[in-house]
Length: 292
Image 1 (cartoon, helix red, strand yellow):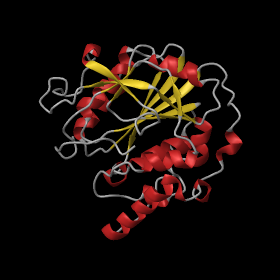
Image 2 (tube, helix red, strand yellow):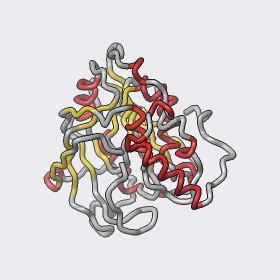
Image 3 (cartoon, helix red, strand yellow):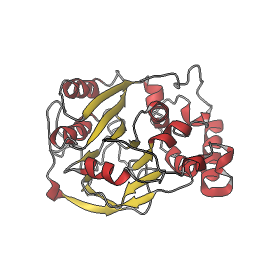
């Protein structure tokens, strides 16, 4: 991946300044300021893109100390590869995370029709701000659509082909599935999570139940490729691309949708699953709902 968009030489903001800027953009994204002040004009993209032949989809994920969960995501593409579309599976990671590196080395050796593996190392100070990797992917994607997701999301039973078929003739800038299947909140000692990640593993779909959404959220933001290339992922807002010392909450997801001018268009696409886990791989603490 071309890393020309990776910020360099940026210093950490002091905590009071950082918190002030964060609240500024959270308030702005609530609609108190025009999005056009901070991003490009997307209105020129309202016409449907011309997609010839197989739809090209890029899936973008991040992983830090979640190699055991990432292995399920990558396994789902091995077990249920696309037949009518082409997928680039992009994973941002830090080489310091040796567990995730082993998972990527294992799956990277597998040749799966319709799937291209794309592993993208980042210094962890940039990995911890998820918008940095997403912006790199958005600016450089060659895909017709780009799916910003998290490493605990799985793609089963023709979900990718159905997504690409649904997206092919759409003028929407952002779409999302009406529902996806979720697991119970799994504890750290659950057998599902007790793995090294270096094998192809599937889940028991009977242990998942539907969760509906009325807007796109951080793990389900499926964006037109031309919109991604035009604006990046909050590409004009430097604050979201500064290095950070620890993993940051993903408030930028809400800002991204504000800049696009949409909370997304709901579509009927089955086959997406999410593994919910009660302990953070990065801290060993309880996790709450995503900020997206």
